[in-house]
Length: 343
Ligand code: NAD
Ligand code: UDP
Ligand code: UDP
Image (tube, protein in one colour):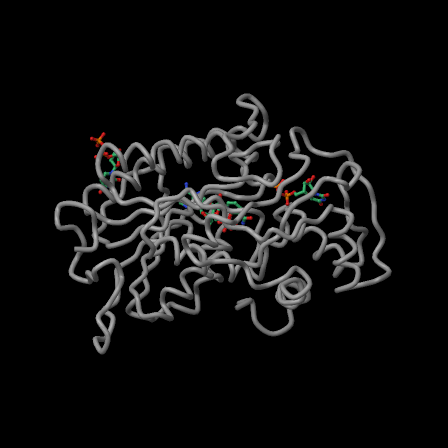
């Protein structure tokens, strides 16, 4: 059976997703929480394309129907407006648990709600996984490393997180979500997978979500100055969304629990990022310095050796290749050319 105990799975079952040669692969039934969001909607596209049945569970806090509307009318696609903080009964083979705002502006908006989503929401989805014997994948974050004292960050590093700061609702929420995931794995034999995702960008990001890539791209297109926070020397590593989706699917289908860092090791200061945005959109775009936010991590770069070795995964899209793909989506959405879609 697909699941780790109780014979699990619901009739769409494959042995670990591997199908003997010559047999057509049967579709799985898969829940994607947060599937109307940025990453979730790209994941849904891939799962639908490979023939699976997908149930998106989303409360539309930061997600949008427009991100998944192109699947409406497909009998293998369902969309449920639901808050994961409330229990949910479904029969499925796999759960990709993404529901949680990812942009600092969004997760700080209602911090208590962010914690509830991470803790109670993850508990509910693990309870669901346990009841039906589904495999569960948590999308954790590089923020579990906090303001890291090790560079680059390896999965064995325990992190440097402020438990009482303005980012704690997210960092500590995700750390607790990882703890819950491992405790359901050890205690209830739920098959689990943990991804620690580093900064990801691409089409369908919320235009005004305050994240640095979406801010710079929207600002350059609107002929506004690029807002660099602090001295702009802090670093991040930016991963294109299709690379992340490939990593998430490999992790779910593979044999290893993780945690796995999923990110692009190319490291940029915010000033360097601003320069790439200038080169891509408008060489005359101005830069404006603003005070930085509290507890901002100084540097971040994934060590992805583990994912390379055990999942055979590494990112393929460099920042200078991925950025233009996002720019055309933003251009269409900001200036209203053609479609809303962004695919
Ligand atoms: P997003 O904000 O675009 O998507 C999150 C989705 O979850 C949205 O559709 C939102 O409406 C939904 N949601 C939020 N709270 C919910 C709740 N209580 N019940 C049901 N649905 C809820 O963000 P994203 O960038 O697509 O991130 C997806 C996941 O990946 C998140 O768990 C995030 O923490 C993780 N992640 C993302 C990044 C990144 O750079 N994008 C980095 C690290 C981790
Ligand atoms: N849960 C859920 N859907 C299910 C099974 C459980 O939402 O199909 C929720 C359930 O309401 C509970 C949580 O998941 O709040 C944890 O469930 P579990 O069975 O592990 O714990 P218990 O209900 O025994 O506290
Ligand atoms: N940042 C910036 N200008 C902006 C938005 C963000 O310089 O308009 C900086 C921010 O201070 C941080 C980095 O960009 O150092 C990444 O911020 P983001 O909110 O995108 O993600 P984080 O990695 O902090 O979660």
